[in-house]
Length: 109
Image (cartoon, rainbow, N blue to C red):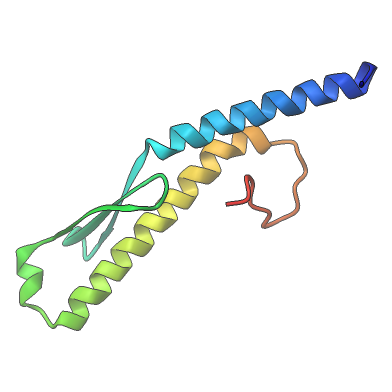
């Protein structure tokens, strides 16, 4: 169907697709921990972004509930930033040199 350079390009695209799938699968096995209040609240997320656990120092529970909520939200945000950085790092090597536009998220996540 394809000859010469086009055939080689298709092979490279297929190889890259396989590598991206492997990187995505490996990412699903990772965990990140976000913290707030100097570690008083921590949240663990898996590679899909699902929450695996929340730990709250008992001393925090005596504070105003709004403060506890803010600390939990902050820990979740911290974990999400770490997860996004992990995704960028794991996919960055594969997408390097592809000249994607700024802000383009690959693989579409």
